[in-house]
Image (cartoon, rainbow, N blue to C red; front, side):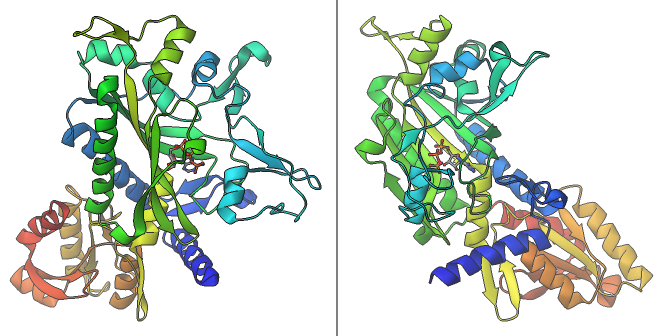
Length: 437
Ligand code: ATP
């Protein structure tokens, strides 16, 4: 079983490289642990994923506002959030022999009590700061020290008042953003599951404390539905409530949406009831009053925050695992058409027949005004189908001699391999149908 699982990860990593989804960062220099680059198909896939998340948050739901905050913030932000405080950050264990450090929860993930690198004895867990340090300005001293953001969330909290005033927002309302985050992960691994530079899609929903439980349940349901709507298999998804001793000290409740990765069930997204910790701490540290007044009682309170926090790269991996399938001699990525990098690929049946190439080019140029589409006239048609199946392209459109007379083309379905003749003028509608169903 273990071997089969490793095998699937190897196949996915290899497919990602072969078809231009994901490459190891700085590869020609031997790579950089926990860092990956996205190639042409990967950029499209990731953009589609982020677009679906944004569509869900900002268009499907009301009163969720967008923000694009900076990666660099004042150091005080991280003092307020607790990231720099001793006793707050992730517990680590050090190997007494090779002195490598590992996160305790990650050691538990792989089920070892010995050093994964040399098999040596490990110390008791100790706390360690995961933020990536940098210096701003010409002088490198304590006063210029700051951090690359470890989560996008803090940029939302520091803008709470700005958004509330400019959007004239009333509780309950949300603020969301997509952006890079950096963590000095001690044991990066499992491809894009645990990276040191990654992208988050986070939404913070601000509510009256009395409504926190209700909205925690609401967001759990909404987020699970989103994965199912995008075609993720139900049997690979589950909720995992955090045990009391796992909760951050301020958290009222937390549940992960876990995915059944080839290396086990692991967190894909966190849904947290963070209580009033964030706004009260930022009020205290910044001196800015971020509290509200309860209209009924006249009493001051800090809004509670229900957070939905997902990592784009980790989700990409989950969607790839979920979509990967092998049938006889072909490998298929059965991605939801909304996520697929290309919605269609256009081929002339024969590359050496100028009339076919010209017509195929015309169709391609027309479709690409509305969709991301690929064009391929290299190699035999079977190989072209094979490579689009691996990329997850839902439709392959082939122009043949009949097309010249009848203005129609062959459209091949990725999953069923069924071919049908479709009028060229109906192609856009056909693609639209699968995208909006
Ligand atoms: P983990 O326990 O796996 O380190 P976490 O609980 O620290 O995750 P959060 O801080 O809640 O994670 O971050 C929210 C989401 O961001 C995670 O569910 C995950 O999808 C993503 N994420 C966090 N750390 C990483 C990472 N190092 N690489 C890729 N994605 C990450």
